[in-house]
Length: 171
Image (cartoon, rainbow, N blue to C red; front, side, top):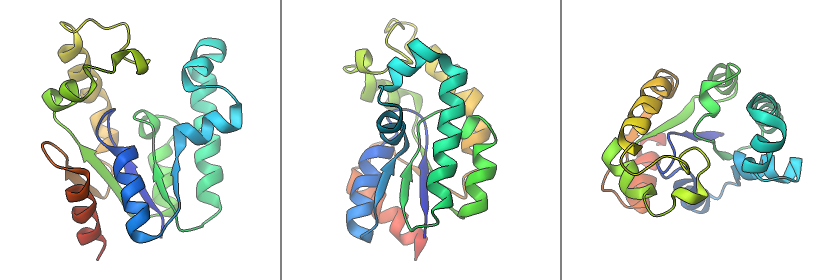
């Protein structure tokens, strides 16, 4: 069984996938980390040196590579992964277990406000402009996120609660 977690930045994809992997005894692949290892560059360095088009091409290639192994895995996607290169169509060819970790704008802001510098997408956005930026970005991506077979709301929930919700849906 392959399980794919998707959602906007700070929705909990990485944290939830790690605990879910432990509980279900499945390997976990964080797509961004996988890309960084394969390319021997950080995501930020790839964007700066090779551009977003190159990154999105590689992102699709490596996602396909992971899915084609057909091994039971939990995959944590980058926030933009579902929105490019027909990635959601590709994912649905390999699994029906896709989970959108839906998080509200205020909750996202609360989670990222102290780590903006580590997040290339928002590092140059002022605190004042952050709600509008995230709101527009979420609106643009929402169509793709809604293609997930399940939606789990993450606001004010601990990682353990989210994992239990996902496990209950899977059973």
